[in-house]
Length: 404
Image 1 (cartoon, rainbow, N blue to C red):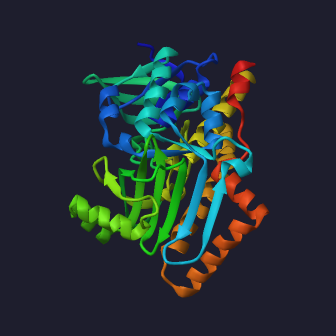
Image 2: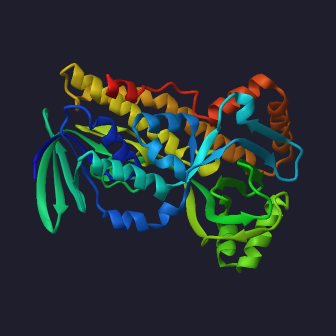
Image 3: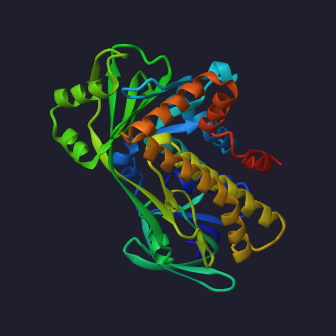
């Protein structure tokens, strides 16, 4: 096994493998380190979660050659209906009005991960798996990484190490990068339901006193992401299936007819977590290793994919210029470029959670007036649609660079 690399990517999930694909047509020597086997990743309950892919993310996946392999498993969102339970405010977005085929797509994490992982194998990108990072240190030229692989210790070096190993990032902890944590005192319950009325490619975001309820069309069913207070969620997880469905109807109504569960219920505590730095030494962290968001606007993966594409573009440019891909200057420039996008999305998401998870009358009037105005003011609606489609942030086109 080779002991030295240009780029060592820690984490073989979506962010890490997408970065590997973005870099693999270059002259860079790349390897991906993953702690779990392919079978363990496939069987993980986290694979059941529905990902809402913004139109901008679909373009980036297409640049990477992923979308043609994943799109058959994805369901287009042609309409979005936003409402506030018990109040008058509503907003409706339409792909037809925006002149696009879809505002976004919904796909299970498992299906997208499988498509990306298959392409990594086909590309012949080296994988060190299963392996755990147990130490890292940087000098002026290289990062030195200690791994536990196949029961043995392995020491390797790289010009740049990228941490794409998720919210519980081992690399972030080894780099001693602290986090800001905001506890929402909320839990997301995710499952899948069948409805009497066909979904017609319509997604629903319904705000309630305890948190948002999202119904996302996937296949012939709806993926449910239901946010409740921690106490309410615990009760809903213990309730019988009939009691759970009754609670869901009480929250959403019967616009889609009767609901029927088609998948197990799973729950996830919700926090806003943000790393205090994106880099240290010759290492940089991306995706969920840097930021974990509330699922209210479905922005987590979309934001992480933009991390991937920005970093890949800068690495490829540095390679072309024969400059140091792991230099402090490059990593600081990357962090500065990503800061605004992170700030915008995190503040928007956190603000929506606080605005809509609140029963105060003055806030209820303000937010419902805002929703009503959004529905009738064309310019405002177009801006919201562009935000929902992930088109507000201009990103490098890696596909154009890779084809050049």
